[in-house]
Amino acid sequence: MEQLKQNKEFIVRYFNAISGVPKTRALMDKFATDESLIHHIEFFEAAFPKYELFADEITAEGNRVVLRARFKGTHMGELSGIPPTHKTVEFQFAIGYEIENNKIISHWLIADQMGLMEQLGVLQGEAV
Image (cartoon, rainbow, N blue to C red; front, side):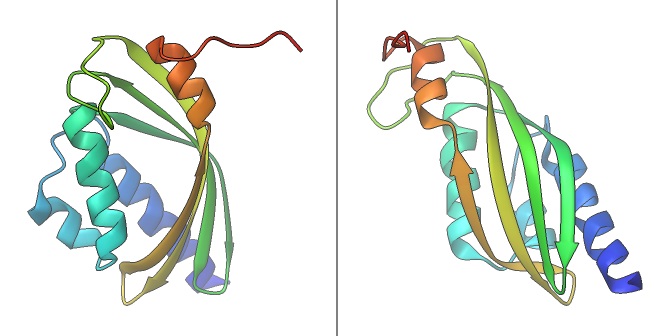
């Protein structure tokens, strides 16, 4: 049980460390060896500089931590061909991390991409 608590605390420290600040390679290297995660962070940092992360729920099992969380940022750089809109967006996502030796070694992510595109004004929401 102590390891589960430590893993959760590690991810909270990680979220707090990268939220609302420039996400430099040196900062990311303190927490992760997962290159795909680092590239993902660099991609979103370029489009939403100093974006913020908010952990709403954290669950741990073994060496894995899963979060239900929120992303908040202002669109200041190109995002997959979409020029900066200067709009502030907030959307939910779920992410799972695998941790070894106090480093994130792998991850998976599910995000509300439709909500993001609607907030950027790229897509119109449909009435259900």
